[in-house]
Length: 204
Image 1: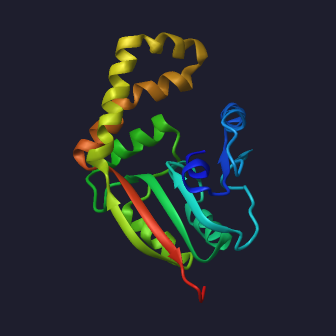
Image 2: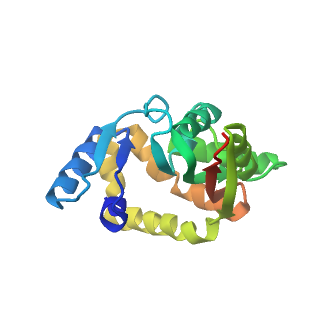
């Protein structure tokens, strides 16, 4: 909705959550945005867009939850028009070699946050390049995002939402219990937060 309102982009959003899709669709209608954003409830690993149909692909904290990350990059590259860009933010594993303790920290984060695996910054650059994209910018924003998890942890402690999570099911409790795991992994370097911009050149 921000892209449609601020930059007049024609946008299709993809979410795994039917609730999120309904919420977004209703909000866009109430705001009378033009062009009207479209929202799909689909798995990012199986969603389809026509070849060379997109100027920009924008992914925020999605790829860490995918099982076949290299395949997603290949597919996404095919959606982009020549000169198109792929902008991505993701939780990252620290760079190798990591100690056993750091590896255990990363595994703990994956378990609590339902991620099959975490790739490092180097892994992501490799996946972009294998897909025929050129990384034009990248960086680490770990220090900038840590505050989010500190605030989340304080709100859990203050509101008693953990009791509601117990009613909703064990996965909700597991998620809340792993806020400390993320903060510890950020502090130790077992985990990082990264951003990337990659471009599809005209001869790809």
